[in-house]
Length: 203
Image 1 (tube, rainbow, N blue to C red):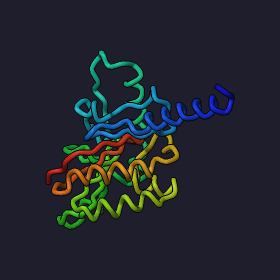
Image 2: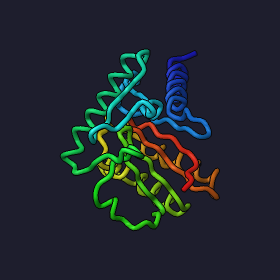
Image 3: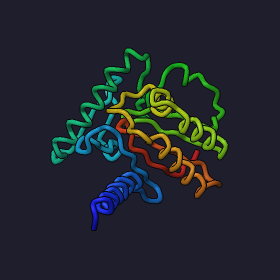
Image 4: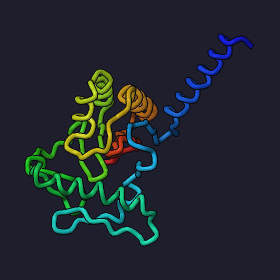
């Protein structure tokens, strides 16, 4: 094999490996890379039952056998979120653990086609119409990284920034999931580590 063919073969392997790393997903959960080191990426939602609200702050009551790196990541996320509450004027609904403000409590009871709920772990995007999915996916595809952050995880303390190509992959996966569930309302969770997942939403 000559050097030219060898170079092409190696490049093909690298490209194939890179694509397989990016497009690792199942029917309900999609993962996208960010600039956050992999060993610090924690799915905080798995530990939600151990998070409570006390005196207007998030508090972790983790089991004693929780790995130290997970305890550290969760405590860091809660501290960052708690510290930002007073500065932003937001507060925590102790029942739902959602981050809210006075304006949101005064909003009409009419449910919007695209609704965003904020939590210590990230945000939940609720889509009640197919048009809302198409519109938001299109906005994210054409957004700069700064604009993407402002609309994807608004008002939430984040860790790292999305990697190149993140917006396109996210929009693609959102559209695919919606296509498979066009008769249902859907939601997309985006964590403060920029991992996202989908599910069926029921009002």
